[in-house]
Amino acid sequence: MTGRPISDDDDDHDDPMPLVATPQWAHNHGADPQIGVRASALGSFLPEGSYRPIPIVWLVAAWVGHSFAMVTLVAVLSGFPLLVTIGATVLVSLWIGNKAFAAGMAHAATGWKIATVAALLINWALAATTAAALAGY
Image 1 (tube, rainbow, N blue to C red):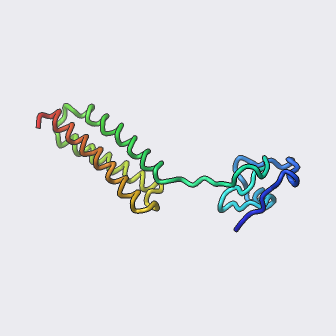
Image 2 (image 1 turned 30 degrees about the vertical axis):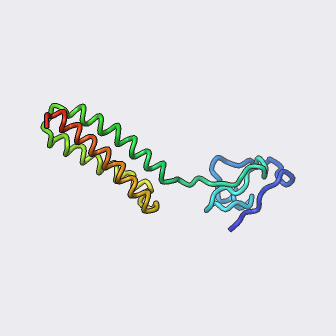
Image 3 (image 1 turned 45 degrees about the vertical axis):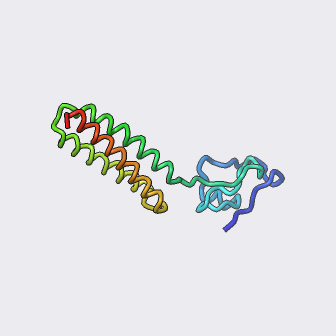
């Protein structure tokens, strides 16, 4: 489906584009709410577009959060037995991975899934190695 772009000639600015295009506004202005706002009340010189989350955002969010969590856990649990630290880092790693896949990574291409799992595994391996070194192993 394609919408009719609004030109400056037929836009009287009486009905400005809302922050979120309602189905009624989209119908009145030739936009397809399933795709995104196809035209802007500012004129047709703006490109069409819609928000489409991309897998690298989920990968980076998971990796940064995981990095912070691993450093924090290893630092906080450094006085505990190694198995406690390893267990806690495994549980947090699984939780963060689950959150990333629930956010949309499950629908991403296989390469993004592999990259996300690999990034979390590498982070976890570094955290486990650091915890082992701090424990004297």
